[in-house]
Length: 226
Length: 296
Image 1 (cartoon, rainbow over the protein chains, first blue to last red):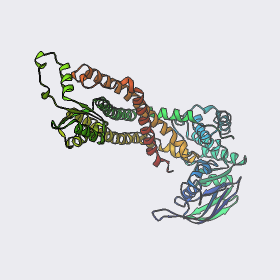
Image 2: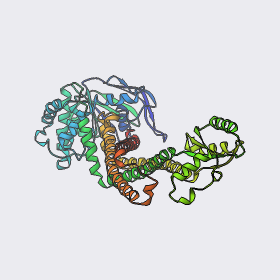
Image 3: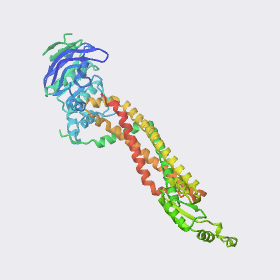
Image 4: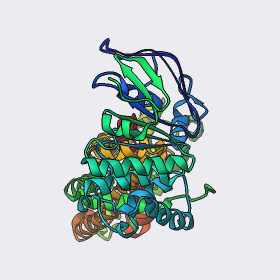
């Protein structure tokens, strides 16, 4: 669940990235966040993951009020999220299994739980046979599937995907987006930041459009109109 | 999902692997710790030995006050009482000139001395002191008394050992502070380098919800292991160096004055202090280094 109420964000250098944004994404929803470069999409992601904090307004994520959150509560809030990045951000020196294992260790999972959960998630993303592979031995599409598996392994309430198909060809992009849609259908809230018009139009989901830090449209089943 | 795993094995494994992933820097850090601890240990052992010699000297902490020859027995008793009142005087014993002559002759084999007249010797007070540090003040106080004609105190040796002990203690103290700071800096840089190389990994961990302590522990364990390794190597090196110096002292003429402390009697203290210092330097260094990488 996301609630952004009259949110403003101004960086130290004076850049006004977000201007009075109001946004509500409920549990179980699938929403695309679209907008041109510099429109404020990345800032919104940073505000939702508590990398940055709003200058004004209220940001709520999965029950945490990020405007008043204490530093030691941030890790707990982030454990309710799964984050997927355009450049995958996998740990190269760890195998696929290792990348998922450390994510589960963060929440204090037992070895038994890891042995049960990791194969399940790898199967879900279609990488059952790649558990022992290292990221640099895999294709971009496979690496992104590992990143999705990592985001999913702790069973988060919500997944935030920041340009998850930015480094992939159209066929792999479609596969990844289909996978995200499937995960959403299992109950995980999904916020996907993208500028790929074709994909957005293909899936016909809710589309939140941002320009110059302001919300310009928010339509269910809408199209990418920018 | 139950949250009960402590991850200790994971932290130790990560810390251990990190040492080898930047081996050269780890080697430099261990060498620095070894050097610092050996220098610190050497000066501390020197101070300890000076202290022991002082203790040995304190067993012979005596000087003589010669009494005015015109003094009567009554006046001598009064003088003895006055000396006893002086601070740091442990005991006073009156030795008459006859007793002094007998004692002197007891140590002589030459018959020429047998006919020596009693007048050659003087009535004296043999005075023992409590604290050698206040030896000279005590001698001065006794000498200032009316009726004390002269005194004899072999103070040079005592002063020399006091000086050695004080200098060694002061130098050890200063060196410990300087070297601990240098070691801390080197360890901090080693861990900072490791943390810098893994900054992306740290950022990923933070984004996955890792707490500061989850990220910090492997680095702290790395610092602890480096400190521990340095401490153990320093201990064995110190043992070797001290054994060499001990042997050299015992086979030289210095052994007549100084009996050094054996390493066997202090090894556990050296090991304990080295381990504690090494681990403390390692932990503090890594703790300081990692701090700024946690602000994600």
